[in-house]
Image (cartoon, rainbow, N blue to C red; front, top):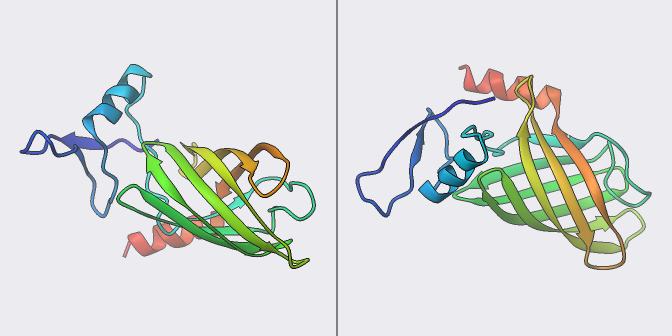
Length: 166
């Protein structure tokens, strides 16, 4: 779990900012107070540049263990490109508040059809330092809903640590 030291901004209207080199994460006082009331002030790290993959296959035509998501994050906005398995190309876009993601996704499948939906995810930092997203999703282009888990790919985690260690 990442521990971050916070300093109060000079202007009362500005959010608290983490003191961690290279971090783009920023949290409002209200978010921190909520997290404190829940018993934790730890915040999972930024998703920017991380590659994640589902831990299990879903139904045919959906994302699966061969799908790779490349995430980006800036100023509370998140987006990702994904492909692999039955998905030729997919995109998601949404927001992050603390450890909660709220986004919509659209994808082109191998059979030439498209589909879209909505997902809410909880960002969890694993004991080995990788990131996990615990997702609750619902198709908007047809029937269906469910839950899934995606985790940071180990090779990408090693690559990111190497890049940051230079």
